[in-house]
Image (cartoon, rainbow, N blue to C red; front, side, top):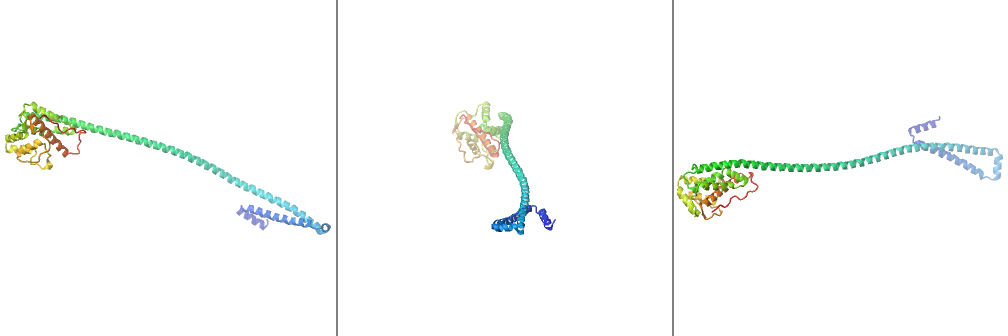
Length: 351
């Protein structure tokens, strides 16, 4: 192997891509030699007939003819080899292209498969999102219904607690009212006082106790009626005819006098208290307190009949004392549980 061939082989080993360029260079050289031979042929063809005959007879003519024929055969053989080399190189190139095409086809298949998988995954994610959204809606609905049930149970518990408390307070009120009436009827409480003072203080005693608490919780004014009926059942009232309120109160003050007993009753009715420690009392009770102390304060604006019977006076002071106790309880505990329906705070009794 010559040095040129060795160097060419080294190039091909280091640069396989040079195979195509080398084949083209060889083919180009063969084509150049063919072109040279073609010119010789054309040159002979262009000679005159005599010149061709002379050439054919002479030695030079025979040598030229032999050379042309050898060149033609050699060139054809070389051309065949180069064409074969090009064909084989083209087959190799085609094989490489086929491999590349195969990879491309597989890549396209993988891409298509991946795209299909992505679409399926997207569809699955969409279904999952819908399922999650539906689950979230269901959970929210459950939470709403559960919260509604909890609220209902809380409300039921509050109502039950109110009912239990009301029942407990009702029992305590019944016992307290009976005890107060029993001691009052026996004369053990408020001895030596006129009937007007005794019923006024009895009403204050009853409604500052459990009976007033029950009325605050339930807005039920039944104990007002029970107290009035119980007092009326104990015997006749001090007077049955209609009398002016001023006359009734003046007579009460005269009966007590101006001593310590009058001061005690007036203080029990709120005399001498700071306004922050007391509430505005009813008009008749306020006038009675002022009558006993000899002082004059702002009278409540509530309307009062100008003339009352004994039963009418009893109704009036019971309602006033019950209202006073109710106002005091509300002022002391404004956030306490109140009845849903407060109802009328007091009713009009017979006059």
